Length: 577
View (cartoon, rainbow, N blue to C red):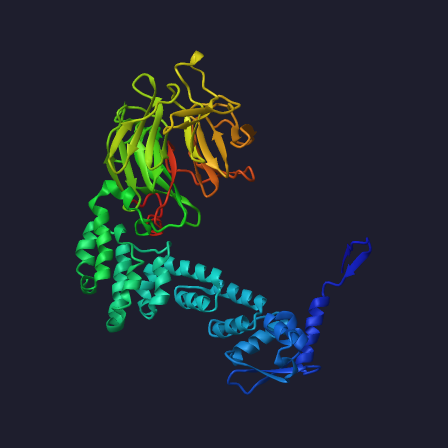
């Protein structure tokens, strides 16, 4: 018994078991065929089902339209349901009258077909729950195809993701199921960003599929090869494995696809101009990466990433930088990571490196004109080194790097020599905040915020921060700027560019020098004296710690797309590839 009040203030007493009792009453009436007013027949079946129109219309959109919109069946005593099996109809009707859905993997297709045809959404939802719970290596391809057949879009996506994750096991243990797929069924798997296989393994599986029924499938191979990302193979794989495949050599379209891979590898410095869907890492979300930095023992070349494919995300390793480095800046462009300046081999340097997550490899780029540590940003396809600290003095100079030319050129200087400042591109403007300048009295940290346009050589000063900061981080998220760290007790602040206003964010005090980046709508940050990266939810104000790093360090954090295949095989810190 439950009570509530209606709009007029009257007390409403509710019997919570009434609905179940009423449904039970209808079920008994159906069993005894009392007051049943229509008979349903499944396709190719001699078993009748006596039911009540009112009950059907209340639970099925199909029957609701049939019995209320003047269709001819409204006056018929017998209704024949084509395309619905006896098992499917019987199970769905049991659900309608009892709210219970007896189902197994042997009957699920019949039940989904009946529930879909009769538009009984609650029964379909239970079928989806059952399939989600029962999906396994043995049946995942069947579940995926079933969901696609009956338009269960969300579950079809989940099933395809499951197949993609289990792809290597399927190829090794259930290859017959892969080979039995039509090209239309196979294609979404090959297009999936979670596909757990190297591009060479993907190509080899396509070849096996073609050879299984060569006479027919050699003409369908072109559709599947469209999903193979040849630029993500090594030059040796393309030359030794792909070009030795007979049908690739004979098919002009296939040969042209392979040529894109060779073209990509022929000009490494031109990669920014050659980006396409084929050159993108198979990943839907970014992973947090820490590039080098300081450890108690000194500088480190080690590169870590937070592996979110594990039940509890843990740290694992990427390829080390060629040289240990700290106080460097990290800039992202086209999912390449540029590591610039800072200290290497014990001295301030002007050198730069580019990390390519497609091949987990490093490449040296041209040196800057000045040795320095500084903040950097990307701007109109170029990288800008913004002022910073050089050999014993601060600088206001700006340098611009053009990737396809591998060249640094002088840019328009900042208003004054500064180091320890932060910069971020936001709404097509470069925002610069804080820092310290030898031009200011007592070398005090600054509260400045201004926009800098290197094209028009204009600087527009904005409202100052509430707290002095240097060595802080600045991020753009959801239409606002956030600054954190850079002071022993300074709390984080948020800036609204439309109102030109700052306000304090509680809960992020005392961070000191900090490195930060935005990923998945959170601000991830690494304080200098911490062994843990944390992330901050700007909506709830909650701070959450990630798993501690194996060794304490203070490095530059950045979000990078890493392939699911790479993350799955590089599980933990002590697994090094």
